[in-house]
Image (cartoon, rainbow, N blue to C red; front, side, top):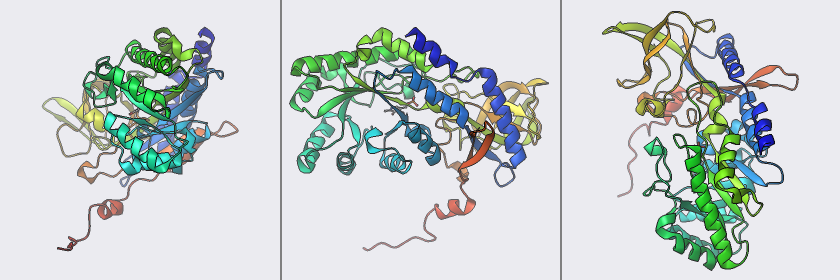
Length: 451
Ligand SMILES: *Cc1c(COP(=O)(O)O)cnc(C)c1O
């Protein structure tokens, strides 16, 4: 375990490396002219950082322990970036028909896709069963529906599981806490342990247990305790039926991201160490493992870069009006206490500013008062035409666009080393055009429907 920990650490980029890469990103954005009046902000994914995070997760679990690592699609719905995960051997965790089709389009083989939506329609279930996609059942009513679908379709290659809520309580962010007594996800372990065991005993095709324990704001030990309860449940089911019916434990999320500095902490190795401590049974070879990480695999690889349009002083407060706000940083704007973001300031030529720190607000472009990326933050004096770079935005920030004020989805570029070690730029997603916004705003006129 110690060896794994140190091996895992050495592939992760240092904080100096991440800062240097970000400076390179901003300089490249300036040099390539990615930012202009038509596109005053963009996103950038650093593929080197992304690859290092992927490799770090892979080396954290030894080859003798068969683990399927999936990327949670909702964290990064960029097709060519998902395709990179697919090529690296990752699977994909999806939660809607759109995410499922995106995963297939990105090249994930069906046996590496896991479907976790809590509101699967009968058609969703039939499609998963027909394709042989693994999925996790959320509740007893869905279980009865799957009985019907299987009776109709017959045999399936899908690995089918039940999502169990360990009911271990909340973390620091209510909306991110999947394991409270009354969380909307899964079947409550404390409520229905005996019924869950009966359900498995009656259905030999149920071979997986799913638990989403831990996310942003949840301590590793707390998350690991939830997993322990699920491993105990798997042991109880296998003991009851007298064979190894539960083959896989599927663990959702679990690793928070440090949004306060360029340090990557906690690491996948820390997460694994907490699991090893709390749930050693997970590592004794009885169970295959599925992981579903989103933010931890992506956040540190992404940067939003936006131009500052104006600066002013109102009521004694210095305010910089920039082009990144609620449309890209939706969670941060609506819950700034839970989702604070750092801001780096660069001059118009792409050089990082460090001098003249003063307290400023960094506002976004949307027409509501709360559209603030940072409030009362001490930052180097910002001037019009400067660029603000927002680190740790590789997860969710490019996949969770908010169309307020009809602000377009920004372009997302990538930078990454080629075979000769040269850092090359590519386009991952075009910006949404103003024409697209108009076209998506409804029919040119009301379309009369038959009476
Ligand atoms: C969102 C989600 C994940 C990923 O969570 P992160 O906190 O981004 O790692 C994994 N599994 C399920 C079921 C999810 O809903």
